[in-house]
Image 1 (cartoon, rainbow, N blue to C red):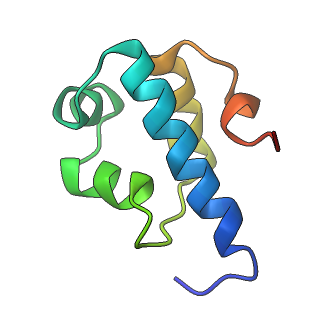
Image 2 (tube, rainbow, N blue to C red):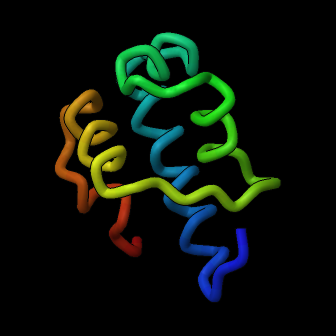
Length: 76
């Protein structure tokens, strides 16, 4: 994926991974709850790839993790 903001996508993925682990979900369980493949979740969370998510998917991820969607988009 070509983007002007690769670091923002990587940070998004790292935050999703952080909150997923904090919630106690494996990628496999999390993928099933979100309705995506394990490969998709691995690509989003991975530091070697830039993978975007739709707003619909972002809202589903936040819902499963019980966090506001903005949590994974905020700059720390």
